[in-house]
Amino acid sequence: MVSMRKFILFTSFLLGLLLIVGSSGNFREYTSQRDADFAVVDGSNSYVAYHCLQGPVMLNASSGVEFAAIKLENLMDRIITVRVVGDYSSLPDGINGSVDGSTYTLEPGEEVSIGGSFSAGDDVENGTYGVPLTVYAEWDGGSAELKDCSMYVTVRRPTYVLKKGIVGDVYNYTTKKVYRITLQLNFTNNGPSGDFVIKDFIPNPGWKAIYVPLPPEPTTGNVSYTLGFSCCHCSGMVIVWRVHVAHGATVTLNIPMEVVFFRKGDYTLNCGAHLCGTHVVSNRVTVHVTGGR
Image (spheres, one colour):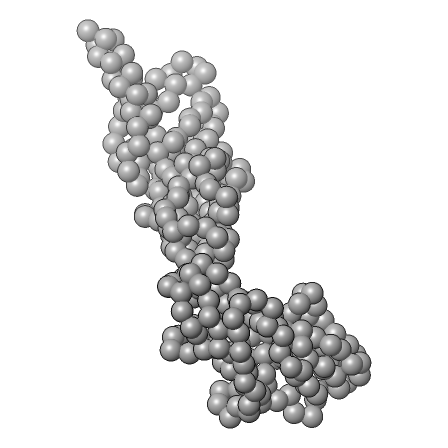
């Protein structure tokens, strides 16, 4: 009778390992190569304890995030090795996920947090996506596979996106040379179609450089612009763009410049663009200059 109860208990445990039990759990029993069976126990008497990430991480399109995906703890009286593997097969195009797959050796009582990450491109649809995780644990005389944890990400596409850069992606220059540099602004409208006003700021570099903005070259969309001088957060020149952008569309706006740097250092070529009527701003454009003093 005792042997039958033990068999039923052991079988029930193995079936339980196949179920998703929530955000935390532990491995409470193993069968070693020495055919030693251990009874199921609770709480702090478990052998491999684990704690899953609580809830999905939030991520805007065109960005990335890093986080702690799972925490593992060795509650045995011997050294164990653990590693985590993710199944990324269900992720759509445009989303990349990863989990630290290194092998960790844990002394009795030692714990480790395993890192994960997600990144999303521009065109990923809003939604929540998951990556099932498998923990592989080994010790002298036994091993286990734990499949109760997953890591999740919720992707949100911002209503409006402003991005600033340099055509050709050249961000390193030398002194006392004349360069023609084209700044590029991309505005993506994920909201309703409409007319928008964008203010774009080119700073005054002072005596260390000369910036000569040339007439802007809008490359897509229904665009007009005006030039003026700014005395606001970025003293210099302001370009006011007026654009009509349909839902889901991107308009590309180019500003060619002739530039000469007289001193080495870092220079801001553009203080960023601001979508009027909103809190949306673009990144700045900064370059590095070598040579000279």
